[in-house]
Every structure is written in structure tokens, then in C-alpha cells.
Image (cartoon, rainbow, N blue to C red; front, side, top):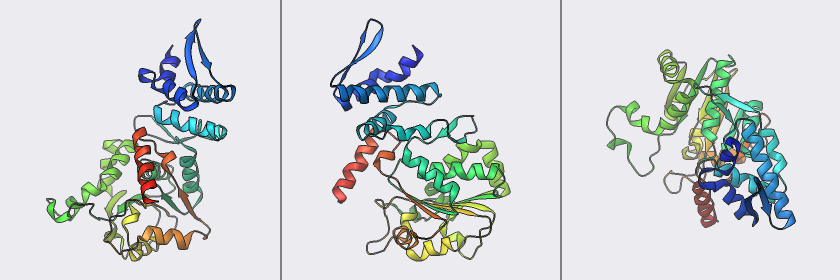
Length: 306
């Protein structure tokens, strides 16, 4: 019964999504769940149900976003691709919750971060670009691969001016760095996070603070890189020191630079794509793991841009 509750989802939304995706009916009959419809559609729906049961048995959560993702894979005969997601734990949060990739794209992104010295993660909101990068960075620190974690992002306004916010420069940029704080606190716990901040083991700063430095023995993450200029991202990339790794994340559909300015992220991807030890992962709306509406919103805006 517990498995059925998780499988069917709140108000049976998971099963309803499967029925809608394959135009089948799922009914309870003689104590069993029976699937009715065209043979191919029934086979695909059954494959999705069995895959969901495997995730549940493995202790993973099953939500409507994952159901829709598996249905899309089944329609394109790629459902087997998700097998590599099962059992592969990226990190463990401070509360003991395992963090796993939810899409094939996320798994490829994680593999690139583990393999390369510099990795670019490009994609829309909700694809886990920053969250997974922070998880990998915390793992690298815990396993003593690096001595510190450095997180940075350009302080570019999205409609509001920094000068209107109270406080000194650090307090002004804190709202822009909030997603990084949240991810770190979830991975490390508030107490450990605070102690590491006090010791300087974790450093969170605006991109401008990186100039003139050499970042050695560190895991460095540049977030919201679509709002860097060509000069800024070149400055950042050339800070790379011995035994360090860099992850650069951004969404090229959310550039807040003044009109006429070229995104440094867009330029960097173009000229660095063929260099060894630099990985580039392009995530798309299918990798969105937030509310299913976010996926539809991203898709609508992409269609409009095209």
C-alpha cells in the first residue's frame, strides 16, 4: 500500500499524467492495477510504472516532474538511459538525505565536473546547475581534494539598483548571493557553515573581488556567468591556480547586461569548446526539476525567442 501511495502520487496525479501521456486507462480491478489501451502505448506506460517502482524501492522520491520526464524518455525509446541515475549518490546533506541526479542531463553534468578542471554548466532556471556544483564542491572539500570553497557571481541588477539596498557593499551584494548560501547551508548544516565562513574556508564574494588573485587548492564556482562581460570572465578564468577546479554556470536566456554588451559566458563557450580538460554541458527544459509549470514556462520563452 505504501508503494501504491507513492506511485499514484497526491490525488493520483502521477497515474493521471501517465494516462494522459500515452492515452491509456489505469483502473483497479480484482485488487490489481490494470492498464488498457493500444499495445505499444500500454507497453510504454507499463515500462514507466516499473521504472517508478524501481525508484521507490531504491528510496527515491517520485514526483510529477520525474513522471513527466520518464514519459518523455519512454516515447523516444530512451527510458533505459535513466538506469545510470539509480543508486548514484552525488552528495549527502547535513540531515543525511542523499542527493541524486534526477535527469540524464544532470548526470552528464556531474560526470563532467568530476572529470574536468573547468566545467561550464549552461541551461535554464531549475536545472540544478548551481546546486549540483555546490554539492560537488562540498564533496571535494570533505574528501580533502581542496582546502577551500570559493563562490562568486557578478553583482548585476535585474531591474533594481544596488544603491537602493541598505548597508555596506557586502550587505548590498548578499541578496545576489543568497542561492549560494542556501545550498551550502543545506549541504553542511548551519553550524558547520558558520564555522567555515569564520575560518575563511568558505569564501563568498562578488566577482570584482577576484581580480589580481591566484586561486589555488580551491573549488571555485562562478554563478550567473551570463552577466559577465568578456573581460570579466577572462579575468576569472585566468585566476586558476594549482590543484583547483572551476565551475561556471549561467542561463543565456536571462542576460541582464546593458543592451549592446556581449555576454562573457556566450563568448567563452564559443572559443573554449575544443580545449581539453574543459567540459561544456548544455542543459535544457527537460532537465528542469522544479514545479512542472517551470518546464512549460521555459519552453514557452524559448519558442518565443526562436
